[in-house]
Amino acid sequence: RRLQRINKMKRRRVLHVSSLSIPTAGIARQPIPRTGQANLQLSLAAYSFRPLYRWMKGRPNKGNGAMTLTQFVDYCAEHQIPAAEITTYFFEPEVTTESLLNLRLHAQNRGVALSGTAIGNKFSVDRGPALDKEIAYSKSWIDKTATLGASHIRVFPGVAKDFAQESKRIDYAIAALQECADFAREKGVVVGVENHGNMSIDHMLNILESVDSQWFGMNLDTSNYIVESNEELYDAIIRSLPYAVNVQVKIKRKRPDGSKVDVDLAKMIQLIKDSEYQGYVVLEYEEEDPHKDIPQIISQLKRLI
Image 1 (spheres, rainbow, N blue to C red):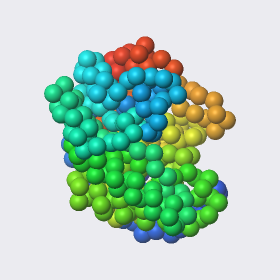
Image 2 (cartoon, rainbow, N blue to C red):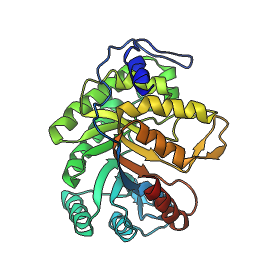
Image 3 (spheres, rainbow, N blue to C red):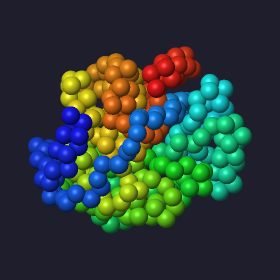
Image 4 (cartoon, rainbow, N blue to C red):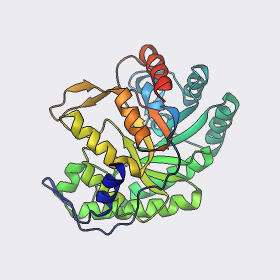
């Protein structure tokens, strides 16, 4: 059944979505070839402690926190979490090569792998200075990711409503992702585009099948598809996993009406295993009490993985 789903995805050429006109695209990025059994490695996203950091996108955090990314790495080491995803929002305003190397060395000395970085770009803008700025920003963090010694960077495609307003923006975003993937290849960094901004599974597959690079794939956030039923969610995840270069899990997800529902983590991990995915599974906690909840969730994920 899994092979049938993959073959069906390969046959897709033109996708029709009511909210967005998607251009015809030839197949470029094929599903990632994997052999053997699933091999899942646990990581924790720095974003899980977002209210507690000293800095937020170059400014003092509104929460008046004092936490640093070095302390986040210490948290991972103390809780025997083997890897950490570095959300770049929480660096000090001036990110120097020295500060990146210091964090890399600290992680090495604490026995914590850096599974990747995550930035907050936006490619759903019109071609010109605004898009050029987003591409330059993304490239700068591809460089910094390589300095950190991480091999994956999470980027955003943009926002679905922006693409719906101007259909050519999807072409501009795909071109921007292609340029970033080509640049990342030279740095030894894989670009993972996240299903962010209310993008549907068809939107994401169109992007994935339009960028021609083995150094490009999906950063699959298993709670980011905004659908009503679990069956719809599981179908979207199954269709996404063959392209996944990084997977993020959460304990809740949103429905179209904005309400939150619990995620069945056991089911989610089983779907990931069934796909024979090999790579990091990153907990991204978005609820109210990280110090209370994260140790329990990490313990559960360790058992499931």
